[in-house]
Length: 440
Image (cartoon, rainbow, N blue to C red; front, top):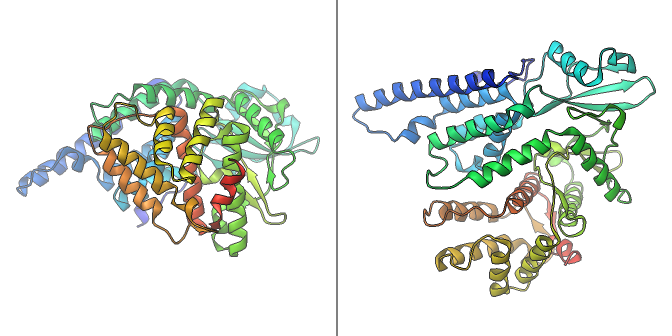
């Protein structure tokens, strides 16, 4: 429907804490008003609706999505993660509306963009460029990307952070969490403080473009001899805490490969799955953001382009070895070995009820099914993901089992899930066991 159509447009980012708080307050009031009207209508019809049913309506989801897209920053980032992680659990119309948050965001008007660059590069920065496109080539939750040509001939991608993002992270996360509490999406009894603290820490790191630049350079070094991948080169002279400059690499969106021949799709997913295991077992550092926009493809050379290293996390030697033991036990169908490894990692404790341990072990064995099949696993012709989702929802609804595992494992699981989702989207066929055994 036309009223649901989302079109990015120039829209100033509310950068002050008070202005952002007012947005959240207005959103909550607007939704509360809608709930009151809908509730009165249901009561008049002799129905007694639940508060969550009144809150999770398409109209309210649209209001939330529109406001988060306007605010950008951590508020939009959290909304993106919800739409990605919980999208399949929501009614289709709500999932579609929240899915807007994974598309291009609105972008800063020229005046606001110029102010940010003046603050980071100083007045007269335009003199360094032969050309600087004011309209971004991409816009996301924390920043937008511009293409530029310097006077010394460098073709660059310049990522510019929205103003006020870093200062508003903590309050944005708290406010979005309050909305989730109100919706009933987060059980009142669940202590989410450790998860919130980690989410804030991660977002602060993602908002530090100098840190992301170091991750970019590190991955460039780690993959220097791997010609199947391209990592843009960091441009330190133009990089600050709020601006990240790198070489521009031409490529097509990775999802567009869905129409390419089977062998192209299979090879690309082989490369991404192999890289995933290299990150975990060899590099011990992983880019954990599964957004498809972080991958592009260069048709002329068949290379995969890797972008956006803001959500990079390092793993300890112990965690890497624990996961290697888990995978070995899984490949050997050693259920007791799997149980011990899962407990060492922290997915459950020794005193976790037997029924919950059994449910977790069953879910892990389900996730290993692609590795127990001989030859290539067909991501298009399987129901593993759906069965995993159903089992996870059933376990999550058991109020006796509310457990937050170590945060590193959550970020890693999100990356694994994102790669699986992309492989399904591309209908790829990959011999996952052969890749895994190289790293065991």
